[in-house]
Length: 210
Image 1 (cartoon, rainbow, N blue to C red):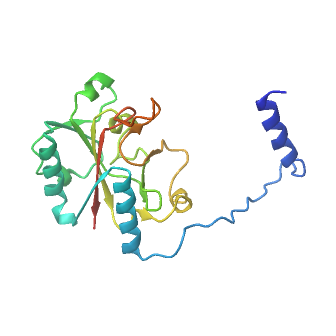
Image 2: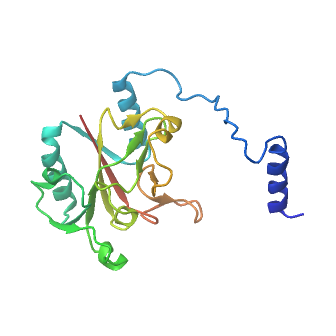
Image 3: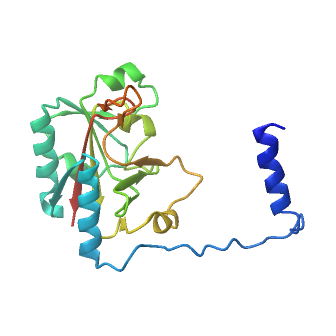
């Protein structure tokens, strides 16, 4: 018997008492979050876990966001930045870099020549230090956040921050192309040596705005 047959057999046995047209609710008795926190404590935990994953965390007010983004791009020496179609235009109003639109015609080689990408996010999870993108207009297609080496991601706080993964799933549409980001891309598969930038950007900078 193959592994596939064993797994399917267990599923059939578990569903043996459920009729073909019966909609049985699933019990979800697990914790929705670990402990009670204020909004500021939740944001602080997010910042701490993002930094633990080697993301670079910044905090600013909405009015200071354009200057903050411009400063990060300048410090990086970015001459080009790819922009999702629905990104708030004022965010890049002070940036001294050529704005490259997110085009379906862009090849991976063309995207690789872009220095940075700036996006918003769908939700951020404090307990895991994870940012989730869902391909919305202000986030763009998945590949624009995987190919460029520098990703600046804006998180609106407190409204886009939740404590836990279960809370984030309540906000997300499973039919959308979800990208879950916990720090910059890295792997230790090769002789346990950490190598960054293999499956995505080598540098992730997160701006908490609010």
